[in-house]
Image (cartoon, rainbow, N blue to C red; front, side, top):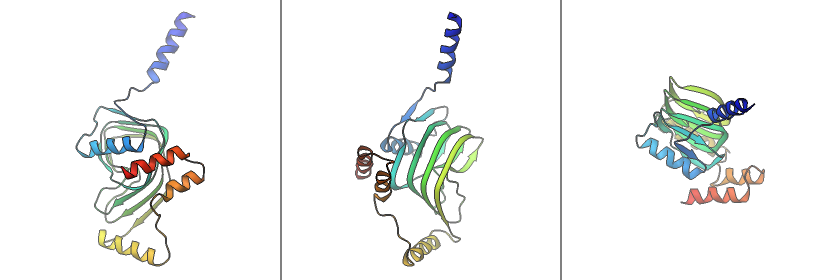
Length: 193
């Protein structure tokens, strides 16, 4: 009986992930992305997402190259735009010999020119990807690069489409019970920081 309890404790410990980086807020996610985009690929490192993150409709700069392990813990990163007209497209630009699992991406708008685009990543090199959910994505793709993409967007807006106002996705999330008031105010604080 004692041996059984010890082996169960060892098994429980083996299933826990030791994080080199934990992400609990939009500010921490942005800091992680900034460090990655400054050249840190996080090779051999473990990143753990511990909360749902609403990015408040910002234009997301894709994480240039990620070579570590990213555990989403079934949390959601939502409400962001990706401008892929300059060649970088996806939440990650390149996933390189790592792992991404248990992550949800939702409420994303992407503008794509002549470049490859994937909502999770533009390019994947030897990375294990498990249990990723992507939903509510609008991708506008055009031929001819940034100039044509901007002209198409202008034409769509001139013909009745309405661009989301700053904070609109956060407001909708609050109104639909997806965020409480404290979370909505936290998003506002990150955006105005």
